[in-house]
Structure formats: C-alpha cells, structure tokens
Amino acid sequence: GAGVSQSPSNKVTEKGKDVELRCDPISGHTALYWYRQSLGQGLEFLIYFQGNSAPDKSGLPSDRFSAERTGGSVSTLTIQRTQQEDSAVYLCASSLEPNTGELFFGEGSRLTVL
Amino acid sequence: RKEVEQDPGPFNVPEGATVAFNCTYSNSASQSFFWYRQDCRKEPKLLMSVYSSGNEDGRFTAQLNRASQYISLLIRDSKLSDSATYLCVVNMANKFYFGSGTKLNVKP
Image 1 (cartoon, rainbow over the protein chains, first blue to last red):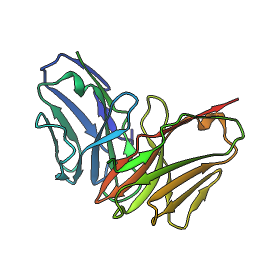
Image 2 (image 1 turned 45 degrees about the vertical axis):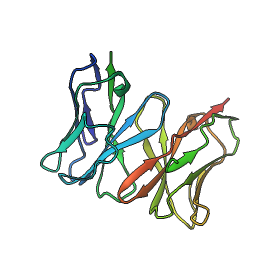
Image 3 (image 1 turned 30 degrees about the vertical axis):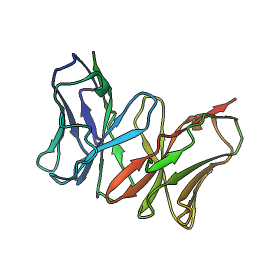
C-alpha cells in the first residue's frame, strides 16, 4: 500500500528480552518520527530522522532504546532488555519534509511486556 | 511543564451542538500548529492546520493567538461521527509536540 507500514502490529514479549519494531514510511518522505502512546495517554516523542540522520534523540527514554534508518527509508526501533513500563503502542509517522504539517501515521506496533 | 496542554474532557454533547476545545503551548518559538483527530485504538490523522488569521473547513474553525500562546478548535453542528479525541499539535524545531487530547462524545 501507499501508506506508512509498521510491523509487527502486535508483540508480546517477556521482560528482559530485546524487541525490534519496523517502520516503512511513505516513499519519498524525508522525515520519519517515532512516538510512544501508553493506554489513555498522549503521544510521547521519541526520535526523528531527517534522511538517515537523527538530529534529535532527546526523547528516547533510556539507553535501552535505539533507532536507525537506512537508505532514507526503513527505520527500526530497538528496545533492549524490555521492562513492563515499555508496554505501549509505538507509532511511526513520516512527512515529506520535517516542518510540513501533515504527519502520516502507521497503525502502530502494540508492545506488551509480561 | 508540558509543551502542549489540553483539557482532557470528556465533552459530552448532543448532536447539533457547537463545541469548542482549547489548547495552550509553552514555547513562544513554536512555528506551526495543527489539530489532529484520533479515533479509539486508531492512529492520529490530520484534521486541519491552524493559521494566525484563523481558518475554516466546513463545520470546523481553528484559531491561533500567538500573543497568548493559545489555539482553539470550534465544531459546529456536531455529528455522531465527530466523536473522537482531538489532539492539539505544535511544531518547533522540526519536532511535533502533541497534547494529550480532548475527548468528544456526541450523543444522539
């Protein structure tokens, strides 16, 4: 499809395991964003990419979180040694340019850490 | 202090009512402003951008007051399908900051 694609849509893991979440943005979109949304809460900014560079990583909650983007396209968010408080929906969005208004979101990856 | 603050609601209104949501932002250097809509267990989608001169899109009117760092959204003639959470969004330095949302329930 032409939209932002995220996988997996659902992930259940045990505390202490590592997880990888993938985002495939809309083709040609230079900016890519990761957000986290806990149940009933707002969106928490994690990181954004302009091309393959991440000018701002300040939103990453801890050093267990990392993200990369390759080829100006696909991005992977990795959470090491998962904790129960990492349980949330991880949303990826892309936009044509970093300062334009329309963020197109994927459907999210719902992570549950047992 | 959060970058964007909204009244969480919920706002419970009858069909046909007019309802207004407000939002304040903390950083005067913020550059652009938006309202997004999020349906239950779905991803957010852009509703409209907000301009200093105010702008209207059908039943929806958005206003920005830079001096007061305040953004509003007015919905006229509410429909059942307007029931959702409305997110105030501010862009600063290429980062989009989201408010925690205002929930609207439109009742028959």
